[in-house]
Image (cartoon, rainbow, N blue to C red; front, side, top):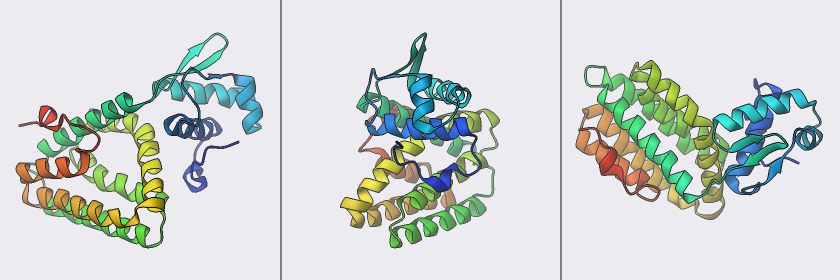
Length: 226
């Protein structure tokens, strides 16, 4: 049994990373419920592998704070609305800090790369490809993260990415199935991000954060780096 992790995203991953990706999506989606006990034998049988890559997967999921390793196996930790809000809170902090590092950089070039990713997001919607949309959405925001040239910021972002990627994938799949027209709003909101970078306008970026995150996090002002 798998939980719907995109097969094309598994390319290049180790067996342990692939198993972790599937279980992570199951936990984030709620298909694997809180307090479920996952055992090495059970998961090895489920994925038709030895126990060694399962142990690797459990280590990754523990790093994500999605499970707690115990003597008898791995207990699934809560991942509800509070945990999701905290994830978005941290993402806001990282993106706000990244923007503060762009002041003396070539923001036109950064904005140009973001425009390219936004166009690919629009193409993904035309083909009703939620997986491709999610990938390009992440790459859109990573342009600013990586342009910050701050190694520890990149490290924290990469640590946050696996769970956040699962959250966004599930959200985009649902939106693609039930409310495809809402992507027009999403595209407009991302254009505000681009305008903020291009003009290096902190007030416009604040507007972009509100447009993109007000539905998931109400403390945007508290995380804004002035």
